[in-house]
Image (tube, rainbow, N blue to C red; front, side, top):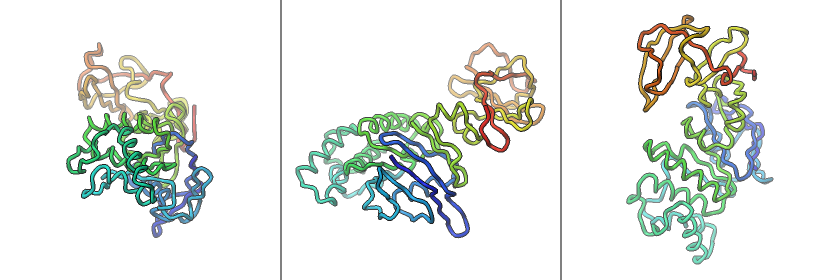
Length: 326
C-alpha cells in the first residue's frame, strides 16, 4: 500500500501541493487526474523522489520513502517520452536496471525474456529503439520499469504521444500488464476516457488539493464537486430549481428532449461518430449539452426552440460550496 500524508510543496510563494493525503491499495491501478497546473506531475515526482517535499510523508508497504533518494526507493517511473537509451538494444534497455543492481548475467537474460513475454514483445531482444513503433517503445519502457521488481510503477502521461487508435490499444495492454504483474500502478492522465477505463481508484487534483478520491462507480454516485463530476462525464450543471444551494450535474446522454421544466435554443449541432450532440443555451443563459443516437426519432434541428427534462435516476446533486449532496 502507498500512503501519502499531508504532502505539501511550495515553489517560491506558490503552494503547489496543499496537504495532499490518500492511500492506494497494493496491486491496484490508480489514476491521478486534474487540469494542467493542478499539481499532478509534482506529486508524481515527489513520490519518485525527484523533488523534495516541504512537509508530510510518503510510505510504501511500511517503508518510509520520504528521506530516501530515488535510487533507493522501490519505485519505477515510465515517462511520456519513454526515455529509452537509443544506442542500446531492447534487451540492453530492459537489463540496465538489473545490471545496476549487480545481478548475474544468466538471471538478467531470464528476466529480460520474461518481461518481453509480459509486454507482448517476445523475440525483439536485438531490435534498436529507433526501429520500433511508439507503442512498442512504450512497452519496452514498461518492461524496463517492471524488470527490477518495483513495488510501485509511476506512469507520467504514458500514452500522450500516441495517436488515438494506438492509445486505445495501449490502454488495454496497460490494464492487462498491471493485472498480470500484480504491481501497483499510479498513472497520471489528462484524458477522461483513459482514466475511467483504467482506474480502480481515481484521485482528482485541483489547484494542489485532492478533491476526489474513490472508485469511478462510487464517485459517480456522489461526486461532491462539479470538477469531479466533469471527470466522470457529468459535464452539465444547472442550479437546482428546488434548492438554490445545490447544483444538478448530469451527462449529455441524460438530457431528454420533448417536454420538461427547462427550455432553450439549439445553438450548435455536430455528429460524433454515431451520436448527435446538440448545444442548448437555456433561457437563463446556461449551456447544456445533449446527445442522442444519430437517426433517433427526435426531429430537433439547429436553432429550434426546445423543452427538455433530465433522466431523474441519473442526476446527481452537489451543493454550491462543493460539499457532497445526494
